[in-house]
Length: 318
Image (cartoon, rainbow, N blue to C red):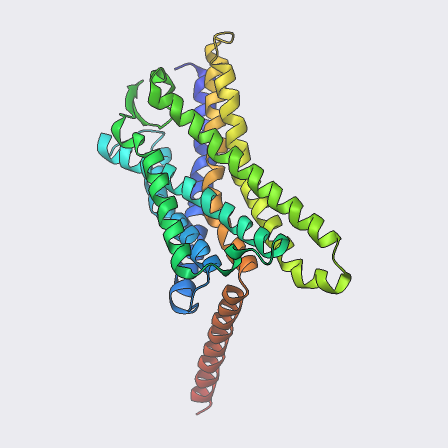
């Protein structure tokens, strides 16, 4: 491996390790708190709560995968766990990334119908039908990402064992082509939907009177938050992937350029993990019940600290 390639891989490792470590710590804490609030402080559930809860599940499962990905990068991109764990890891990462994107999109769609079409029958959907809907989405996502379980993604190069779903050294098969197509389409299609929902809500509110705008101001905050999180976390990796595909086209056969494009793509791919760390912000803006439950939890903790400090002070005075 030449010095140029080593430089790019060293840069990737230097960026990926601290980034994944921060994402794992903050994401685990944020999603654990969110799960606790959804399970014990937010009943009965509304359809919007069902969407947010499943978004939390997708994020939490992704957090469970991060220690293995972190170990991979900390070990200088050397996979030590074997072929089957590699397949399972890449399947889980892809599945839960797709799930996160799908449920973020549902949050935007839910707000769109409530603001733009307030009398639509979807706004009166029961929790039962919302649950059936998310189960169907999980099944579709599992089917669409299950090909990762049937393909070998472990390969040897320069005394290192790699574990990559984007295995460009064996990218001539149908699964690799589908992986690229699915990776891009699962971002572009939801992005179009989310942007449509956002602009539709903004246009709707422009025609409202000032008193009515205050009522729907929360919807604007929600969809804008979703757009920011979505673009920040998923746009860089999609641009990076397109650059890799262009660099590996028949017209560009420079090895160093190809390697550099690949490592830049893997750096941008790390930003997708930040999504699971930022999604609790979406929960905070999307649900007043979630916000109130979180504030009550903070207030309770502050009261407990004050009580503890007061008892400690009284004991010392005695």
